[in-house]
Every structure is written in C-alpha cells, then in structure tokens.
Amino acid sequence: MSYPDTLLFIDGQWQAASDGRTLDVLNPATAQVIGTVAHAGQPELAQALAAARRGFAVWSATPAFQRYQIMRRAAVLLRERAEEAATCMSLEQGKPVAEAHAEMAAAADIIDWMAEEGRRAYGRLVPARLMGVTQSVIRTPVGPVAAFCPWNFPVNQVVRKVSAALATGCSIIVKAPEETPASPAMLIRAFADAGVPPGVIGLVYGTPAEISETLIADDIIRKVTFTGSTAVGKILASLAGTHMKRVTMELGGHGPVIITADADITRAVSLLAAAKIRNAGQVCVSPTRFLIEKGVFEAFRSAYVARMQALVVGNGQRSGTQMGPVVSQRRLEAIEALVNEARDSGAKVETGGTRLAGPGYFYAPTVLTGLTADMRIMNEEPFGPISLLCPFDTLEDAIAEANRLPYGLAAYAFTGSGAVAARLRDTVRTGMLTINHIGLSLPEIPFGGIGDSGYGSEGGSEALDAYLDTRLVTSMDY
Ligand code: NAD
Picture 1: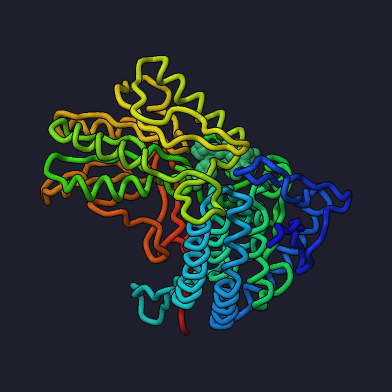
Picture 2: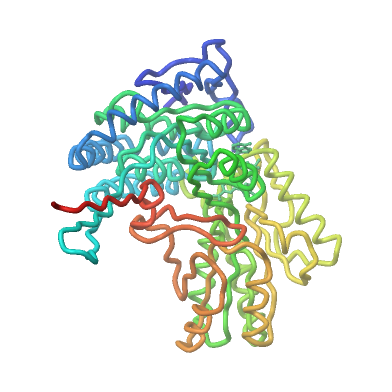
C-alpha cells in the first residue's frame, strides 16, 4: 500500500492550501520522507471558521436521533477501512501495525458509544417553590469547537473530540498532527462519507501556534480542547481564558506505580511491561515511576529487566515487532538528554540507555535505578520507553512520592491488600487510579487528569458535558 498525501478538509471539500504549501511527512522507522500534508494559511483558517459557523447552524438543528444514525454509519465505515488506516498510522507514527489496529477498533467503539450517549443528553425538571411554575434545565451544544490533537494516538485523540462534539450537536475544527496526518484524515473521511454535512467537521494542519492563536481568538469558536504537553496546555488555556472560551485540557503526566510486597509480582511485571512499551512509551498515562516495596524490589527488578531485554524492537510494519521507534528526531534527542543527565548524576542503567542502530528514531527499552528526586527525569515526563525503579520503606513514603509532582493523570498500584487499595484510593492525587490491572481508556469511563495534567474528561458521560451548556428556563402558567 502506498502512503497518501493529505489534504485539508474544509466545508465538505478536500483541498490543498491556496498557496500550495505543504510539509513533509517522515516514516520514523526509516527517517525517509513518505508523503506530504497541506499547510493551512490564514485564508484556509478563515474559510474553516465560516464553514464551522454554518455547520453548527445545520448540525445543532439536526435531531439527536439522526446525528446518532450518521455517527453509527461512520463507525461501520471506519471498521471497513481499519486495515488501510492502521497501515498508514504505523507508517507515519512508527507503532506496530497490531497496535494501530487496536487503535482503529477502539476508535469505532468510541464513535458508537458517544453516538448512543448523545441520545441521552437529558435535561431535567426541578420542583418549584410556587404552584404553576416550571423550572426546566436544558442542555444545548456549546457551539463550534477548536480541537488540537497530538501525534501519539493520531486517530484516538481526534475521535474522542470529534465524537463528543458531534454527539452533542457541535461543529468542530480539528488541527490534527502534522507528523501523522493521513490516519486522522481517514477518520474524518469516514464521518464525511457517512453523511455528516459540510462545515460540521473541518480538518486543518499547519503551524500549530498560528492555528491556535487564530482559532481560539475568533468569536465563532466557543470551546477549546487540547491534548499535549502541560507547557503548551498552559499557553492555550490562557488564550482561551482571555477570550472566555470553554476548555478541556488533556496534558502530560508522570505515572506513579505503587507495588507492595504482597502483590502478585509476576502479574505486575507482565502487565506493566506491556503498558510501558505500548507506543514506545509515548503515552500520557504510561507507567513511569515504579515505587516498589523494598522486600520485593530485587524480584521485581530482575524480572522486569529480563522482560525489557527480551523485547523485539524494530519497524512496526514487520510482523513480530513489539515496539517501534519514537516519533521524531526531536523526541529521540529529548529522551537521550534525560537519560544521559540521570546517568551523569549517578543513576544506574540496568538495561538500555542508548539509541539503537539504524536510520530511524529507535531508543532501547531502558530501566534506571539509583534515582533521586532532584533528577530531571524524576520530574519531567520522559515520554519514551523509560522505566524508573525506586524502592520504598513504608506505604506513606510511597504515597508521598506518588503525590510529589504537580501532575495527576494516571496512577497504578499492585497490592494483595484491600486495605492498602482503599488507602491509595483515598490518598493518591490522580485523575485515574487503576489497581491490580490496567483498566484505563474505555469509552464509557472518564479519562482525564487533575492538577498540571489538566481538567475535563474525554470519556464517560462527562465527555459530553464538556460540549454542552446548561441553561435554565423557568416559566409560570397564568
Ligand atoms: P510539544 O509540547 O512541542 O507539542 C505537544 C503538542 O502540542 C503537539 O501536538 C504540537 O503540535 C502541539 N502544539 C505545540 N505548540 C502548539 C501551539 N502553540 N498551539 C497548538 N498546538 C501546539 O511537544 P512534542 O515534542 O510534540 O511532544 C512531547 C511532549 O508533549 C511530551 O513530553 C508530552 O508531555 C506531551 N504530549 C502529551 C500527549 C498526551 O497524550 N497528553 C501527547 C503528545 C505529546
């Protein structure tokens, strides 16, 4: 299969930029250019905004049941096209094809669930204090949305935002990732082919700061949703604040994992190693700081290191590959700098700690011990296949370390004790806590962080709340 060039999608039309500008797309497994993506400028952004205004008028007036039918059709089309989209995603992002397949399947599930939930975006009647008064709480779509999506899950990050917007009657302009443009374009094509009217979804690529500054400042946009780094999230949240726009922020994390001595260590090693290497560690909910009770530290360390050493790392297109490259030279350098700095400050490299040979952006699965809290890698999200193993004496020490950072996205625990599980539930400051299994990211459960990891949710019924205004109408019968 050849990799396609990607166009903008504005007002129901696939189009190039008016000045013909494009960006190159690289395959991170080979560092070769495999295609191009159109780069939107001001004329295209103005067109997309005007189309989103018209699209909102049409879609918000479309009955919820009809929106549901169109969305369900999009999910069917996406499943039919999953093979092609997964291959593209693996080529542009680097992840193994099997992971890309799983992402496509999850995307179709998300569309189905959000479509269903859109039919249940109920209002309510509040009992009144006076006879003859009716107090209605109604929920209406917030308006056209600007969505900014990163490259780590090229389809999943887009589908969560588009499905929630569409289910509630909003139009949406998506700035999809320039690094990985083709697979999100295939997602948008499925919606368009399913019958979503022109203007309801816009798809643009370009210079991220130019697009966000233009869209967020424009009166047409009523809501901003962003997934990416905390640093960029803070910039976009302040811009949104200046212009009084509703905001959802899905930002970085530094996932703590608490493993107590009575945990099933074999099971913990197996589940955590799989979670760590997924998408080469470029996952906001990736387990990162492994806090292990002293008595089982050695048992966990040796089994986990052996697991990392046995991994098949290579081109995601090759069958049998368990971990692909990281997405770009920039990411490779950022990971390398963090690990080298830690090593220079006294951390021990148990395995990995180097780039891998080859033209692509490969970094070895890496396990570090001998870490201290002042090291940069213990404070900044590595966003790569890096595991930081730290022993702890008491549960209180582990909880204090888990809560030390301003992030609060995903946390993990493996324990044989119900009392410990309950204590962690009450004390670990995190948006999501998963105990004795890896249970995040399903469409029907909330997905989001607290603190510097952002606010708002991209799963569960809460995902739709973010796209709805709550309004009151109170009336008295004469
Ligand atoms: P980055 O901070 O440069 O960019 C992160 C994302 O924000 C990218 O998708 C980028 O296109 C976008 N972006 C950057 N500036 C923007 C702007 N002014 N307006 C709108 N969008 C903008 O980092 P990166 O090297 O691409 O990614 C690495 C870091 O990003 C990671 O360390 C991680 O913290 C974070 N990240 C998080 C997620 C997530 O799922 N939460 C996904 C990807 C990246």
